[in-house]
Length: 132
Image (cartoon, rainbow, N blue to C red):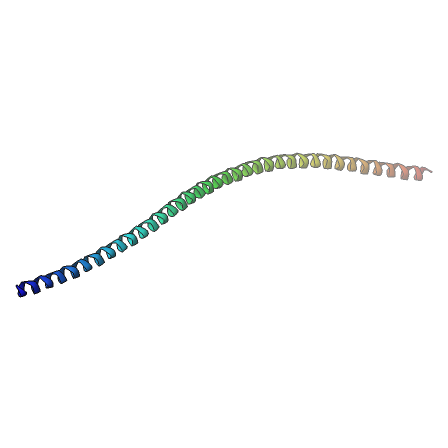
C-alpha cells in the first residue's frame, strides 16, 4: 500500500508538472499566435500601403504619359505653326526682294536716263558756247 501510495504521489507530481508544462506551452502558443496575428496585420497594412502607392504611381504614370502626349501634341502644333510662319515669311521676303529688284531696275533706268539727259544738256551747252 505504501509503495502504491508513493507511486500515486509520484504520478500526481508528474501530472502536475505536465499540466504546468502544458499550461506554459499553451501560454507560449497563445503568445506566438498573438505575435503571428500582429505580424500578419502589419504585413497586411504594408501590402495595402504598397497597393495604394502602386495605384498612385500608376495614376502618376498615367498622368505623366498624358502630359507627355499633350506636350508632344503641343510641340507638333508649334512646329506646324513655325513651318507655316516660315513659309509665309519666305514668300513675303521673296515678294519684297522682287519688288526691291524692280524698284532698283526702275531707279537704274531713271539714273541712266538722267545721265543721258545730262550728257545731252552738256553737249547742247557746249554747242551753244561754241556758237556763242
